[in-house]
Amino acid sequence: MRHERLSLDDLELVRAIGAHGSLTGAAKALALDHSSAFRRLAAVEARVGAALFRRSRRGYTPTDAGELTIASAQRVLVETERLQRELAGRDARTEGRIRITLPDTLAPVAARMCAAFRAEQPGLRCDLVVANAFLTLQQQDADVALRASVLPPEGLSSRKVAAISIAAYVAAGRDSGRGGGRGKTLDEAALAQGDWVALDESLAHLSSAQWLSDRVSAERIAMRVNTLPAALAACEAGLGRALLPCYLADASPGVRRISAPLPQVRADLWFATHPDLRRSAKVKLLREFALKWLPGEVALE
Image 1 (cartoon, rainbow, N blue to C red):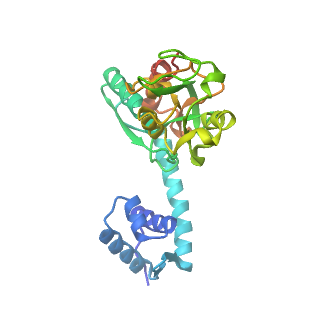
Image 2 (tube, rainbow, N blue to C red):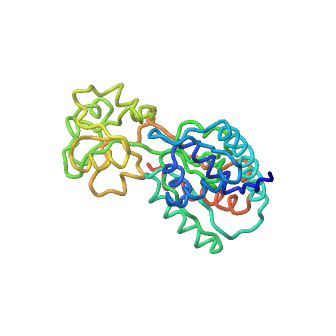
Image 3 (cartoon, helix red, strand yellow):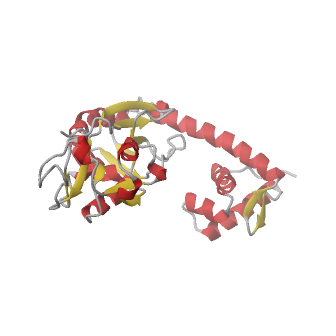
């Protein structure tokens, strides 16, 4: 019996179900409604003449045929995505769209950068994809990533944009604490006093979390948060001092600095793209613009 060929869309669906272990998760990842995904899977299984997944309350478990199909789908799609990246990397056009993934704290800065970039390059449009988890550039979730880290992102073509200034802040109008009056900056010994907003274990790798762990006792941690915007909000509410990127906190009227940028608390801003896209004309234009425009926004005195 002759079976019909599977399309790339079919392979995408099978791969997604295998990755998520459920039809609901796969449908969401592929921007499909559940009923459409259900019908498409039934059609795929009819084409191959075998059940690819066992359904249960725990989700979708691949059968032997499903395991084979998922492995083959992964190989085919990876190769297809590689070809698409290579073709995009050879693209000499200076028009179209660039998808930028970035953390939530950088969204206001990136939006301003994109507005300035569009004024200079009216044929190009930037789409922002806010994600604190690093979206994969291998599967074309985005063309470019802006990321703050001590080391460059692995496996990507990365350029350091600037060192990010990080300082201590307190709620506006509040006394900066022992050793410093209103509006004054504190030395490190005085700075470590008072209540603090700290980062939870999910952000323990950040140098600001390590600085607090070394200098501030647990009794003086008024609140722990898992994002920097939450730390800013808690600081604005007067719960305690917070170490924040200056590009984020300086824009808030609800807090003020009580220290100079701390040299021990550091992170670098990186412009990263997949190696296959580094020669793309539109990516090169954005990279060169970002390298000139962003340092003045994130490396603040």
